[in-house]
Length: 378
Image 1 (cartoon, rainbow, N blue to C red):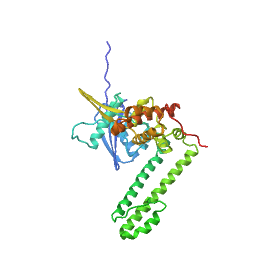
Image 2 (image 1 turned 180 degrees about the horizontal axis):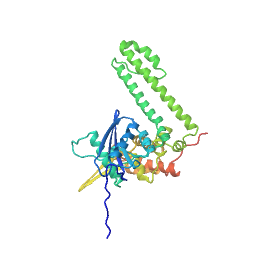
Image 3 (image 1 turned 45 degrees about the horizontal axis):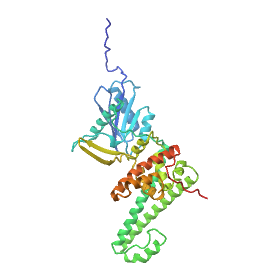
Image 4 (image 1 turned 180 degrees about the vertical axis):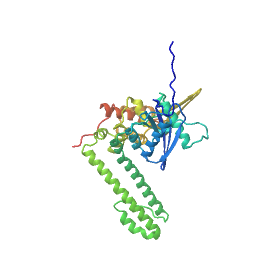
């Protein structure tokens, strides 16, 4: 009869166990919570962005847990303002890191729940261990390459510049109305300088200065917008973005909408089926069924909001410019004659179908049934 002899373990005994670390990323400081599968968590605080201090914390956590220096390390943090640089750095250090969607993290459903960095770090650490145990607990984001991440900057900056332009224009209009001066020209347009010269005498001196400073900022925004749009047109003309050009061949889809869809979704993400496409865009239904209660809560809105917004806009254009397509005919049968509210509901459903059709068009070259392409330029 054989007997098993226990191996004594002391402080110098290295055990082949994996280390788990969660990051709570702040502007000035980061909080790390680390543990293996046997001990309670240990907590560390480092200055934000101090990668050398992070490595020192990993070393100290391994020593505390009596792990081998080469023990596997798993980590995670919530997607936020730090983006992907930390993920790439951790991966380069041999650490298996996950970037998780903050909205997918489960929380206590009590009306008042305690929330601190310590509790959040402990929660992330627990869910990280559950994830690696095979449980599905959150949504893990897919990493873009540095080039794919950088390609999204142009249209996002253009969107911010558009918002700034509207804000400056509305501000100038509001300041003029204070003295019952009504605009008759486009602010910043060809006739704006002459119009302002004729009417500035009706405005007090301090307010004149404020309007002129607003006009100067508006002119700068317009100049930067034109520069970015010209750069984008040149790149498209040179054939640097073939997927954008392919998508823009469909009637109802222009270069702007095609650019956003390709750079945000279709240009670098890979989907296995139509459900993944809709889920990425937040266009999936969220039913609530409990007992006799059957409620539809609307779409999840958990995906890319920029792509979802442009898809809804394109869906309205699709109805006007692709009247013979099966998508338009389906919408007209189901929603066209049922009032404004049902049309607004139906346009979201059409946006989901349109997204799937565009994905198939880019992935397999399948033109949406009944849709027409733009005429070739002479």
